[in-house]
Length: 279
Image (cartoon, rainbow, N blue to C red; front, top):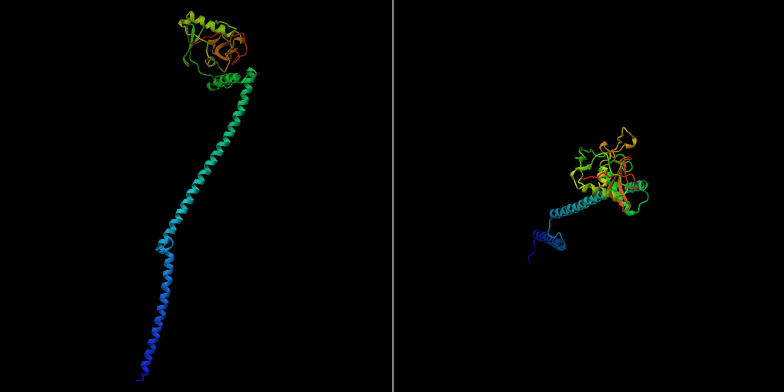
């Protein structure tokens, strides 16, 4: 067998070394590939399977924005509810204040009515309270119930035996001599007699309501030149009737009437009552 030369043995050795290095590199490549396959398998089992880093980042930013939006939505809702709560609390405080004011006013009104008419059962108190508010709402003058009332600007026109008020379209019985009646039923009978004889050409005369009678009330007395007794809280055209009956009643035995000589309405028994009919 021919002995190999030194150069040949050197080349074989170098080739063997390269083959060994190649085998090592191949082994390492296989190991890396195996690990890569394992990672890819694990990745494929997750929601971000097959996505690039940029895609994952985009999804993450979207999720972040979504949660931020949700947080902002709930924060806005919370702020709105807090504002609504503050508004309701303000209304509650105001309602409590209004309620207290109403309670104080109610007690004051009850004392006023008690002073004017004495103790009244609930049913009669409600009736009196209704007339009290009628005076207040119309701003009629009443020394007890509305001393600051200004009354209304009547537009009186005196014609023959009647006084026409163009302001509220009412015609009053005129003249200076009037029928005095101690009882309400007699006052009604007197009005019937006016209709029977067609006083001033009309047959639809009646007793005025309390509201109509109070429309004649003035905040200042118009003093008579003859006697202070004749001074009335009314226009001089209505002299001769210091106290007049009305068609309204507080109870069956207590009709309402208006005292022009004292500047207020009343329903306590009085014998000096006159009829001033209206139509």
